[in-house]
Image (cartoon, rainbow over the protein chains, first blue to last red):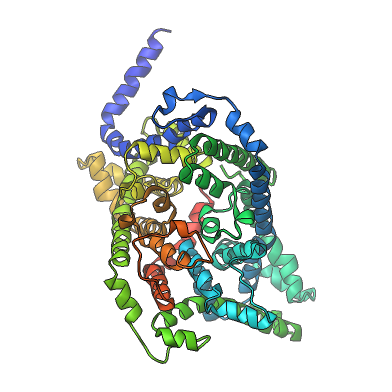
Length: 309
Length: 295
């Protein structure tokens, strides 16, 4: 019995000696994960402290759940929750189906050149930064001569400052999102559609099925698994509204509907220096997030997918 | 495919509808870019005079002259180029050196490290603890803060590792018999055979660096070190009192920018993407598929 651990130790020592260059190679990456991924995880403990930068984590006072109870009793909490959930719902209802519809339409195109051209075009915004998207939005909608601003004013007969009105914030976010990502989102569906057996179409025509019927009964079921998996993945990231986009589109007039968990953590933590409190907010979001991810992964397995992790 | 499938009258109506819808979609995607590019070459007078145009009557380069003569914008373009090039090299170094050992089945500790990588995809310290680590390391206001915290994308690492694993083991064995060390195998056999994969990830990493706004916002407060994306926000989004916080406005920026300057900065911020896009396009469909069967 005593010989076993000895033997094992010499075994791993020998292993390391033999592959020493592999360990040299892996070192930078390993240190990267330790320093930039795992050290911050340890830093989460400040959520349970009244963290004072000059005292450090070791000497700062422990306050238990105080930061959390403060957050949950703060009226901001419900505002953030509402804004985050409403945006996530809008995303599911409007953004999620868009790539599926476009993929179905693209799949019916038989002129290869046209199909390729459209694909090439609609992928482009995916690679453009959120700052550029926000800038383009601004240039088009600014009351100082923005083309869309003028157009909207002309149609409705009254000037409407879309950028500054709280009511249009959410639609604007979703429209931006659609413009940027819905073309890109078609890739995965088109790949799934490429595998559909064409004989099914031949058979359906014998049965007298029209175009829409074929789309409904053959094409759509063919990508059903992909749709379900992506939907589940999206549920796993339900609370992720995207910091950059929201942050860039927020201004003093729409802040009330714009603030979400991520932007709140930034404002309270970085710009106001409330490190412990905002870490607690971030941790709350992460924990709910990981529950959603693991839960939806379980759901994925239930649907017969080998699981996402 | 059988043409009978499509030639019914109802099918024709559907086709017309379909081509028109997708055509509109394609136009809606490019139109904003064309409009911005066209207007960036227009004179201020023409922009105020005409409501909508893609090609200006009078071509003017004054907006671009202003951009490249204004030290603030010029410097931020330089920062972006530097961070993109250096940052991508950092990404590749960290990703490739870690992926290779992890791809080797005889590498002791590989499972522990893989689990460590995968767990980091599920859970993270979050914005504030990460910020405190960066601050603790003294990296605030340093270009390292734009390159090191994202040195490895766990997802890319796993894809590269899987690619290395799929290489025929006979190649490595042959090299080893010829007296190659582990480093030699990586440098002479594995990397040259992985050129397309490396190029793909280099492009993806580079696009990420060029587009990066968040890290700069968090870690760089010295306006001399701002990359273009941050400068772009200052110029386009914060120049108006009605939108954005005036408090965040850079006090060094004296000249109030005009419409065509805004357009020109947007163009400069987008051009590198449009230049690499043709190279990217060859690869990304494959990349997405690789990603969907990760493990």
